[in-house]
Image: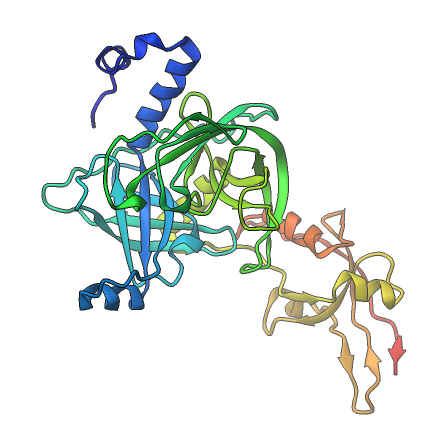
Length: 368
């Protein structure tokens, strides 16, 4: 693992002409980019076109990832590599025509996290891991952050608040645009956000909101603090057009630590669940249920069924018999389904303490 000499780098690249803040940003980017990788996700069709020698441009999925440890593990978003037949990874130090191939170690689809492992290639140097902040380190709204990735298949730019601070840095001239990196700057504009991905359905909690320009291709890249430490992973944007509109979201480093640890130790993520299917909140209110959530059904042999929760059923004559209503979980109100998910998100599998549940037991309320 090489040691970065900031003084020598400044002298060799003429950076003494820059002011202190500019030097700090450039040095941070130079160190961090060595641990950021570009991911090319190829489908079976892409591989068929490539092997046929055709000049046709096959569609390819591009994204970003970063080095997690010295064992060659890469962390990225699950949606970057989902359904890939082959995954190729490039680093800033590789020659233009070289790349690593990567295997999928495991993924957490609900939290949009995937872990890859690089296959050691003869003569290719494995990249160094990025430094991560400690899980308990506090973040602040207004804190400056930097997002590194390859939006639209391009790399190596620095912007601030969406305006160019540095134009494209041609650190390598190459026709393979997917191997370039961009760095964009912004601030943390919100903490503790909740977002729901359509593919997963389950909300993600404690998400970092940033105004750093995150565009397609940035997914899976690191969100860094001013010291170049990873505080999160860029994952999604809120935009009506699909292009950055000032609101980006990143999965916090504390969540990444938990997910990666579970995948590396067990090969998958285990998440607590009640085994209950709830009625939508709007339907509950139309049925006159002002507090809590109506139990539509329970998973066979699941925790709820074993506990005796009663499901909503329709009898032979077509009349609907409402089931139990969950009004509290461990003393916390459950008026929305997201309240259930939020509470379970704080729990761990195999804990001794079983959550307590307050119910309105099903009455003989029958609807025709």
